[in-house]
Structures are given as structure tokens and as C-alpha cells.
Length: 236
Image (tube, rainbow, N blue to C red):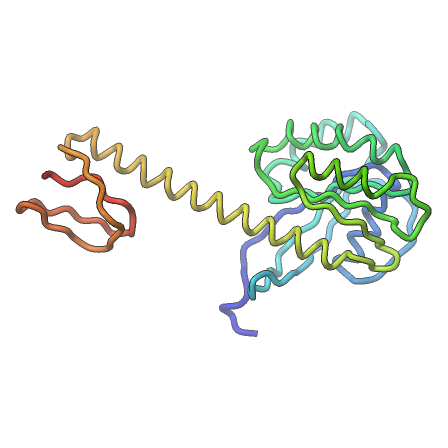
């Protein structure tokens, strides 16, 4: 694999959902492609996954989830550190457990309260344990995801059903959201730079010109722009 095809940046992913929703089994299926029937865990689970999106191999996808005891004060005190600055969140419920579905609103609210950017981070809704008897119809989960404007997948960590497809879709959402954020930050930075020039009295009149690199001479006045942005600092 060519080095140019490998992305080195780290992405932080968290899993949220009730105990018994199958988060540990889902994490192990994503990271190790195996299934381990474990008891409900206490503490911090962590794994590093990889995925290929648009020809680029992302190898540092860190997946975290934490469980102490349901609603414990210890978890609540650590939640801000756990959820802050996550690039994406996998919301998990079990199709055989209606209560795990009902609890999703609380998990979403906690994520928005704790995340540094309430509108940041890609989100996916995963209905796990598709291999068991369904107590939460797919239509209900799909409508819930539609209201949130997030992707929805029914999966089985035990049988590996739809897990890879769901994760690939999720990672693509992370990358797209990250690219949008970088573009917005660049535009904001350029806007602040132009505003600073105007504040220094270097801008006499604003006129929009096409994107370019290098220098432009208008009426004998030379302005230099090193990156391709819309220029608005020419004297005409």
C-alpha cells in the first residue's frame, strides 16, 4: 500500500448505549472481527480499528466506551472527559430490549451537553442483536434516526450482519464532517485576516475578484495573495 493512501490522523470514536446493548461485542466485531459472549463489563473498553474511505486507509480509528454502573455518579463525573472532542458517536440499542431504545434520548442529550461542539461529531444509530427476537420494530428505529438526520443500521455483532457496512458508512460521515469543519475554519481564518488588513487601513475599497495565486497589479497598485482565496483588497 502506498504511503499516500494511508491517513495518519487520529479519530476518536465513542459508543453510547445501555448496558446489555452489545457494545463490547460490537467493538470486538469491528476491531478483531470475532464474537465473544461476555458479561456486562465495568470500566473502559478501547480498541483501534481501520477503514478504507474513498481510496484512503484510515488506521487510527480509536473506539471508546465506558460503563461503571447504570447512572452512577462516577460515570457522570467522567462523562465530559469521555465525550468531549469525539469525532463520532455510535448510538447502540438492542432490538430485543425496548428500554435500551427508550434510553437513547438521554444518551443523545448527555453527548450534546458534554461535547465541546453540540453540533459536532458524526452520529450513527445502530440496532444490535438482529439475530434475536425483535421487540423494537425496525420502522421505529428508522424513524428515530430520520428525525435525528443520521444513518440507521440493523446489525448483529454475533453473526457479523451489516457491521462492516455500517462502520464504513459511519467513518465516511466522520471524514466528510471533518473536511467540512476544516473548510469552515479556513474560510474563517481568511476572513479574519482580511478584516485585520482592513482595520490597519490597508483596504481602501472592496472589489471581488476570482481566486488566484501570486500578485495582481491594478492601476499601479500591487497586492499579494499567497493562497487561492477571493481577493477584496484592491484599490480601484
